[in-house]
Length: 585
Image (tube, rainbow, N blue to C red; front, top):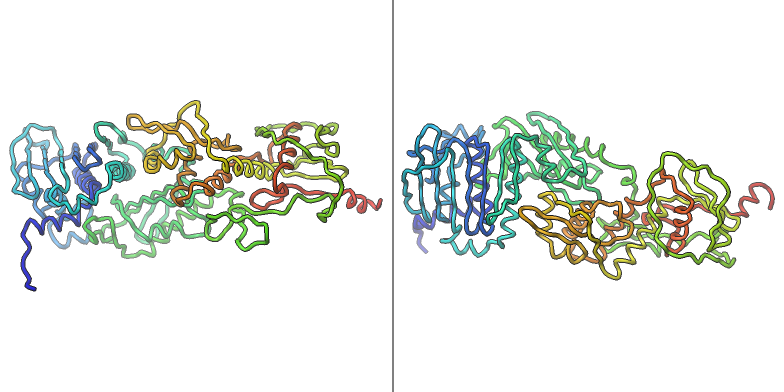
C-alpha cells in the first residue's frame, strides 16, 4: 500500500469536521467572533434547527473589505501573530480555523462593514471554493449566513439529530453566552419566531433569574486560591440529584472535571443549577487543547479545586434545611421494610414501619376496637400566630373511646384513647397520610388538575419540557407552546401537594424522568417526597376539627405508627403504666 497526498478538498473537509461537528458548533464559533469584535448585540436566526440555515449578525467592529478574503483562509487570524502569543491567549478565538472550516462544508455568505468605511463588502463561497467579493451597502458590523450545512459531506449530515434536538443545543449555547456576557443583548429566532432574548446591560443574577426562574433563591459566594479567583451562583433544587454546571474561565465556556468534582465534594449533595466564573492570568491556563476550545488545562489544578470547593461548601451550609439532614434507612432492614425499586445508592427513600402500637405496647391487645373512621381528606391548615385556650375535651362521634384533649405548646396533639394517653406528631402523621393517598391514587393511573392561571416556564425548563413532553403528558402535565414561550396549563392531580408550586412539581418530575425510564413507581415516590415537604408543621396551630380529622385519617392508614421516613408519629402511654407510676396498680 503506497502513501499518497489527499486532494485538498478532502483534507479541508476532514479538518473542518474537527471544528464543525453540528449546527451548534457553527453558532458557537460565530458568536465568539462577534464577542471578540466588541459587539453589544448579537442576533442568531436558524431554520430547521440550523440544518437548513444559520444567520449570526452583530454590531461589532466589522471586517475591512481587503481582509475579508483572508477571513475564510485556514490559519488566518487577527488575534495572534507569534508562538509566544499562545502562552497568553486573551480572546475567545485565535486558531484561524472557524470560518475556513464552516466555508468548507456549507454555502457561506458574509456581509461586513467597519465604522471607518462608507460601504461594506459581501463575500460568497460554496464548499471551500474560491471566494467572490463585492461591494455591498450594509450596516456597521458583520452578518454571517451559513446555508445547507454538510451539503457536501453526507457522512456527517446523516448523523445530525432532528431539527428540535439541534435547536435545543443551539438554545443552550446562546443561553450560556448570555450568562457569561450579561452586558450583551442576545436574540435567538427559530423558523421566524423569537424563542430567547436578553436586553443587555443587566446583572448576571438577573439573567440567571430569567433563565432559571427566581424560585428557589439563587445563592452566590466567592473564593480565591493561588492565581485563581472564582465566583459561584447556585440554585438549589430540593430532591433533585442532577448537577447542571456552566463553567467559564476568563469568559470562555469550558467543560472541566476539576470544577465539577469540586462542586460535588463534601457530604451535602449539590443538586441543582450552578454557574462558576473563574478569572486567572492567561498564562495560568492552556486553551490550545482541542479545536472546539472547550477543554482547557490548568497549571495549578489543586488551587482551582480548593477555591471552587470552598465557595460551594459555604453555600451548601447556608441552604440545607434541618429536615433534609435526616438519615435514610439502609437496605437489608428487617422484614416489612419497604425499599423502593429506584432507591438511590442503596438507600431507601421511605422506611417501612411496624403496625400501630397497641394500648399495652405488647401487640397482644384483644380489647374490641371501634375505630371505624372515614377517610375524608383532612384540610391543610395555615400557621396561626396565637394558640387557642384548651377547654373541655371533644368527643369523636365515630369512636366512643377517643377524646381530643388539645395541643401542647410544643405542637404535639394529645388524645385520650380509652384511658391511654396518645401524643401525635402532626407533621409525621400528615406525611404518612399523604404518602398512602398518593400511593393509592397513582396505582390506578394519573389524573390532571387544570391551573386557573397558566404558568410561564423559565427558558431552561421549557427546553427540558420540549425534550420529554410526551412522557410528561403521560403522567398528567399539560402544556401549550406559543411564540417563544411554553406555558404550564395542568399538573398531575396528586393528593397532599396543593401547597407545592406547579413549577416545583414539574421540576421534580423532569429530574425523575431524566434519571429513570420508568414512569410508574419512581413518580409516586418523588411526589410523595413533595407531599412530605408540604405537610403541616409542628409549629402550626390546629383547630379541634383539623386534629380530629388528622386522627381519623391516620388510623385508616396501613402503617399509621410512623411517617414514611421511619420517624414515629405517635407515642402511647398506657393506663396501666400511668397507674403503676402513681402507685395505683
